[in-house]
Image (cartoon, rainbow, N blue to C red):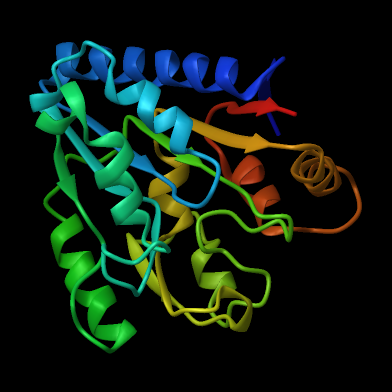
Length: 230
C-alpha cells in the first residue's frame, strides 16, 4: 500500500501546492500526447484548490476535465459538482478547457448513467490525474459504505467506467466513476482537510475497519498522494 504524504500548515498553502502539482502533470501530458485529462471531485473541500488551479498558465485548450462523481441534480443546484467546477475551476485561463459533465436531464439514474457512460467512452483515457475527496464515513467518489453496488464499484478489474449508485446515505441518486479508471490514472491525489477527516483516513489505513477509501490505496498501481491540512 504505497503512500506519498504532503502536509501543509494552512489550507491556502495546500490549495496552491496541489494546483501546482496538477498543473505540472497536465502540462507534461499535453507535451507528451497532445492532451491532458483530469477528473475532479466536488463537495465543500476543493473550492480554493479549483480557484488556484484555474489561474495556472498551461494550455487549457488542450485539457479535458470531467468529474469523479455527480449527484442527479442540475448544475444550478448548490449540491451540483458540475456547477462547482463551472463556477470555480473553469474560470480565467481554465475557461478554455473542455468540460464533460456527468449530469443529464433525465429523471432515472440508470438512464443518466447510460448517457454519461456514452459521453465518457471517447475521452482520452487513461486519466492523467484524478483528485479524490473523502467523507467522514470513509467514502470517496460515491463509494458509500451502504451502496448496494459497492463490490462492483470497488472492482479494479471492471470494464465499466461509470455506474449508478443507490445508497441511502447519499441523499440523492448518484453517478460515479468506478475504481478501475480512478486507479489507472497517472496521478491519484486524495485531498482532505480537517482533523476529523484525518482521523477517518488514519482509521481506514490502519488494520481495523475496512472503509471504501482504503480500496483506493490497496488497488493503486503507483503511490497514492495524500494532500492534507488541518
